[in-house]
Length: 266
Image 1 (cartoon, rainbow, N blue to C red):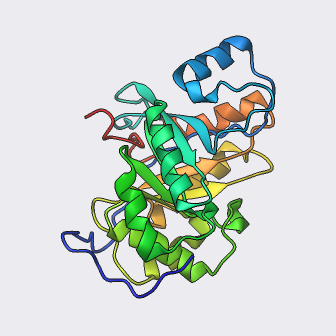
Image 2 (image 1 turned 180 degrees about the vertical axis):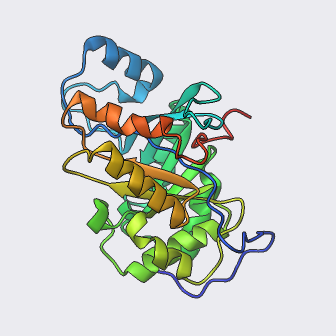
């Protein structure tokens, strides 16, 4: 990944002081077990490209379902609008051409949101490739460049990685995903985040699901650190772990519960 000196693109309004406004929590299911035929049929009917024969190559993008509540929560914690679910597809091509092709495939397969996993690109030049990739995406998207220390594929210089994410924001990306632990360095780096870009601060636990009180404390800390949207992904070792994570959506301490993708409804 290479990044030279960058300038703020024309027509982008900066937010100035960061103003956290949103929180979203969604569970992550990382235990891979055989699924019932009905579930497989439901998934593959929406994503025909996922219907695979033995020995066929797996698609180079992952699919996740996130349920989020639309609107706010009252002081008692009840949601003002019904929860909605969106399909998020993570594109992980290794070349720019492959990446764009996979992105088009994912969009055509019925995804609502596309996550651009830049950390999987092997010959990526930020100034040369980033804007091209962003313009090629026909759906709302999240720009992510996940570091190896947070379970991703990027092992290069941290300053370049964060500069790429900041540049994506400056180019007008709808969402950028930044690790919670890297948030202070991201916001302190050169360039301002536009008002139009929502910053997702993310935290991943690859071993277990912490208690609800611990997750609530982390969510509040992530909001205080500058998150527009809080993403907490944990490992579900038991079915009750999903309830622990989902309890964040009903917590009255949450300032606002809003969809990860408000553009879908428009």
